[in-house]
Image (tube, rainbow, N blue to C red; front, side):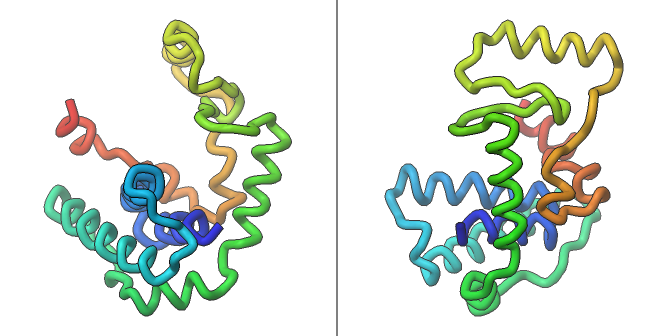
Length: 167
């Protein structure tokens, strides 16, 4: 729960690009490197390291300025508290209500639930349908639950520059 709360908090503080990057790093930290996510001091060190790298890279790519970088001490204080816990519980409840009981799952347009093992054509069909309509039905379903403001959601996690760099 602590790592989920931390990613949510980082998203609110620095935006989704940074929180998504931290989430990716924590997945590697846990699933590839084999570290426990409940080791708060180590989790805080990894988070500070990754947030620093991500913010620095983002600032070099754009004119965006970010809040002051968090310290290990600040992250430990956050992790030792309960801020964000109710939002994570609410998100888990909502996932259960819509039928998400495992990962990977994709929620497309705030409405369509697709298993990560679905055939590629299913995704193509869904995105072609959205393309034909020119809009999606619904929108983000967790922004309000997790307390992420609309500006942050609208800004998204992947800028055009990042997508061009990847391509």
